[in-house]
Each structure stands twice: as C-alpha cells, then as structure tokens.
Image (cartoon, rainbow, N blue to C red; front, side, top):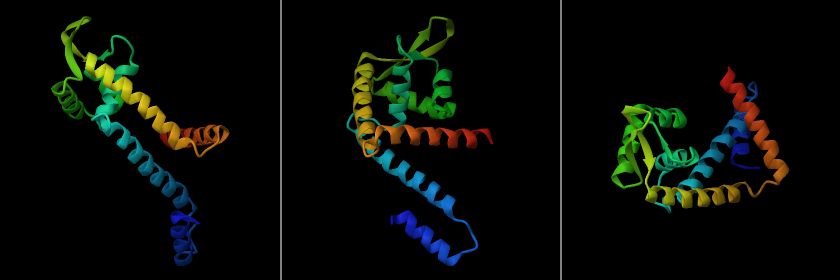
Amino acid sequence: MDHIDRILSQWRRERPDLDVSPMGTIGRIKLLNQLLMHAMEKTWSEFGLNGASFDVLATLLRAGSPYALSPGDLIASTMVTSGTMTNRIDQLVKVGLVERVKNPEDGRGFLISLTPEGHQLISNAVTAHVDTQHALVAPLLPEQQAQLDSLLAQFLKALQDS
C-alpha cells in the first residue's frame, strides 16, 4: 500500500458513495511528474540550466543545422507566450549561449541561433538528460515501458481531443 492507496482508502471510508479510483490514476501521474521533474532539474542544474533554458537550447539543437529558429518557431515549439520567450532568449543571449542573427530569408526579421558555446553545452546536457531519463525508467522492463507509453499516449489523445 502506497501513499495514494492510503488516501483512496480514507476517501472510500468517508465517501463510500463515490468511485474515487480516478484519484489514484491522477494522483500517481501527478506524483510521478514531481519526482521526474526533480531528477531532471538536478541534471539540468549541473550544466547551469533550468527547465526553461534547457527547453530553448534543446529545441534549437533538435532543429538541426544551422541550429537557428525564428522567435515565432521557438514559441510554437515550446508553447510559451511571446513575452516569456523574449525573456528566455534575453537571458540566454546574456550568458552567450544564443545570439540573434539576421534572417537570410527575411531581412526585417532575425533568428535565434546557438553559439558554439551553447551548442557544446546543450549537446553535453542532452547526453546527461537522456542518461537520467534511462535511469528513471529503468525499474520498468522494456515491454512495460512500451505498454505504459502506449497507454499514456492513448490517455493524452483522448483528453486533447475532448
């Protein structure tokens, strides 16, 4: 019996008229998210990054050469507001991990590009991040990981479609 089971047991005792089983699913997902984020934040901090800066740098890296995107593309990819993205970019420019460069396809616009230092840092951070993620899912067998991934994808799709 885990912490979530104890909570469910209390609810079942106090409100036997309610089916509180969804609380177990949602409570475990919420707790898992907290534990996973804590472990990943610890890894990111080893590189002087947080979730926001890792997200921007990783988005630029996975975009491929020349590792540059318009602010609009970054916003769409990371799903944050333009004000939030501007702040993130400003902070990363300040520490020399990204730079604003003229957009060769639109002389009025600019791109956000990884600097060589930013490219090296995020390449190393992504390697450590993936190692952390492997360690986090290691308690599950590969078949269990695949099954969980499939179930979560189905659950996510159903909620997004509703």
